[in-house]
Amino acid sequence: MRVRSGLIVLLSLCAVPADIGAGPTSTPHDFQTRASFALAVQTSQVLTPGTSRLETTSAFVTYTNEFFRGKTNALKVQFFTEPIGAEAQAKLLSQDDRDMRRGGYAALVLFLDDRDQLWQANLTYVIPGTTVVRTVASTRAELTKYFADYHFDRSRLRLKSKGTYHTPPDSKDEVLSLSWDADLNLRVFDQIKK
Image 1 (tube, rainbow, N blue to C red):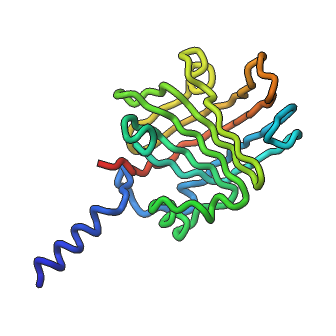
Image 2 (cartoon, rainbow, N blue to C red; image 1 turned 180 degrees about the vertical axis):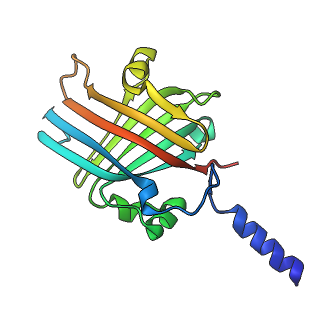
């Protein structure tokens, strides 16, 4: 009976995503950061023309391989308009972010190479009734311009990034701009699927 109980406890512990840095228990302060995002739609067949803004007060960072069928690792930085308490953290660790996204949220997905350097950045902007996802940096020049202040050491992500994505000049069906301004230094949680 002891062997079975020990095995169940061991398997349960293995199923919980870990903090890469394996530090002390998190507090809401560990997730505090301010970031702002703005969307300006001039022309679109899908989106309502106008401007909107999202001011966030917390962020949650995961190291993941959920994209491209696990073939690349990424840092997923989810920005929320509400503080992240213990209950929200538990839900986020189990990949349940529905409650936190209700009032709107943004996410930066930073795709990494084998040396944990950025090769692409995507931005998701969501407010009730509007969702926009764009690759905001993919060339060396864009990554250097928008993400020069980036450091990831497998336990924390330090990122200071400010920029604006514009639709290409030849775009006729959709003309929009998507801006961001983020400054964070946060713990990273490992959700890599082995």
